[in-house]
Image (cartoon, rainbow, N blue to C red; front, side, top):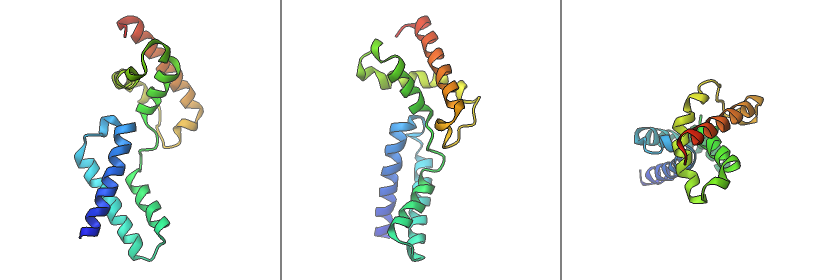
Length: 144
């Protein structure tokens, strides 16, 4: 049981780090974090008991832990803010401004099928342009 708790803590910390960095809207969802971490720890243990190599066990657990968390709307908005608007604000303002703009731009994401490989599609370029325009209009109307 002690080993399983250690594994669970490891997966919990890995997931929390990703959520804080790329999915701040989910970073405080303890139920989601606990469930995903438990699933990953159980998958790792099951894979290990089945005789898989450590690398394969890690791969299986990470697949479960990070499923559906490869494309981040926050990261996309942050990229737009950093690339297009970084000259009008200080570096320490970029993340807080992005958090504010995430809610402003959230409706734009509903128009796209956000698969894990969406960032490599032609539709991503269109979304990027829409986000840039939405933020520019918001700044023009509201200021920084």
